[in-house]
Image 1 (tube, rainbow, N blue to C red):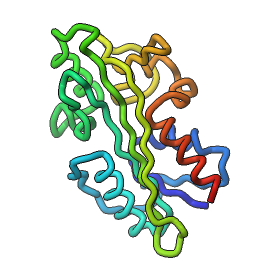
Image 2: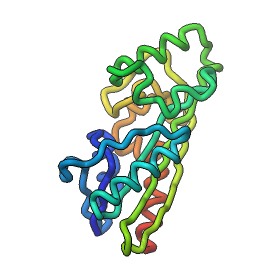
Image 3: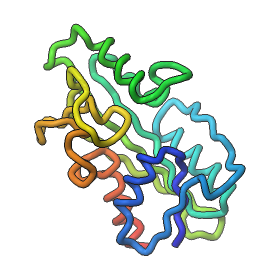
Image 4: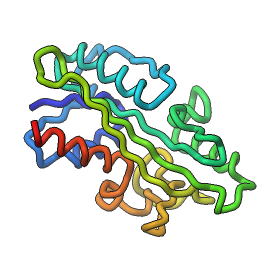
Amino acid sequence: MELVIATTNKGKLREINELLKDLDIKVKGLAEFPGCPDVVEDGTTFRENALKKARALAMFTGTLTLADDSGLEVDALDGEPGIHSARFSGPDADDTKNNKKLLRLLNDTPDEGRGCRFVCVLALVGPEGSGVREKVITGVVRGRVAREPAGPHGFGYDPLFFYTRAGMTFAEMGPDAKNKVSHRGRALMKLREYLKGR
């Protein structure tokens, strides 16, 4: 079975590939499909954005497609950055700028007020005749925003996401440990079970 992962984010692609590696699935990234449409993520929820990407790219590639929309929801910021996580610091956003903005906004917030959660919504959409219409899976993990970045691993907000149960940030945990407990890892484990049962 071939599965297109609707992302150009190498970190996401690496994580997904790692979690599905022992299944009989050939994972492909968007780089293998020149001319892919640039899907505008203008939905109001992670679910809407993931489904929009998966539908458009399944139609374009003619292949079973998995799209992911994920982000960090911070309690003290009323759920922000949420669906704007990747673009939190503006049009030229990157991980470093996003993390700096988040720390600045929470500068005066005490530890007990820095609760947050990572959310990952996976949308699996198959082309006509594939046997898969649409399947949406959600993974969530709670933690808190650290006071400064820590750890060499991961990407995005991983250096700031302090996973209380482990006593360290996702970026300090390393890929294998993180994949067992992360929002994406939890969603992908559910996806694995779904794909194994097909």
